[in-house]
Length: 254
Ligand SMILES: [Zn+2]
Image 1: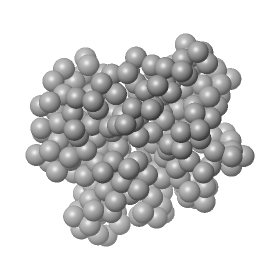
Image 2: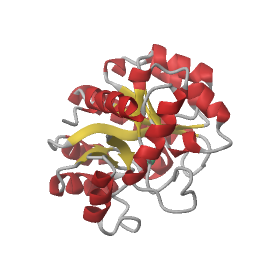
Image 3: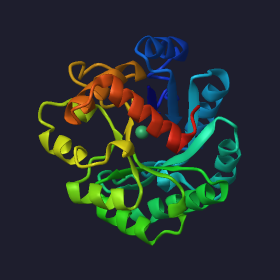
């Protein structure tokens, strides 16, 4: 299986990446995509990809960091994106939950990154929180729609999901799908075609049930996969094969 979104670049949380990857492999997770949130964390993601066969990188500026972003940063992101193991641009997008940056600042950072993704023909990974309508309206008007698009850690409504499906998006599914009180989320995820689903932990955050309260890591992916398999009435092995194929299709992590 592939953990398509984790933050092993957060060194405080993952001081020993080799053992984190070894535990992942013991749990049948043989590839991970490490996602940047600014230039420095993107640089670490690429360094990890350089050092570890199982690691691929996704580089870019997270919307909550957009207040510190200037277009001068894009040259550094472009250089990192051209690394052979960089597979996507992100995480970019809109976050109206936190007010560390304004919507205008988030739009500037995301617009720059979308142009870069289009130029390099790379998929984009969107972070979206309490902003699905604005983000989907934006994507609908975009030319960059020829890039593969991922709605990471999807948490929108069933209507948002339908719009994302129509736009060709893939959907990241994380630990919350395992939570007892997540019936609404499960009902929405169940409406998404199985070939659009991607497994992700967002580690160190969003630890799946029954380990909530402990740090998350890629080794937890089977818990998400099993719950997703149950939801789609397939075996865990079938869901693992399908989501791995989906990840390979979007990100070329072969
Ligand atoms: Zn993330």
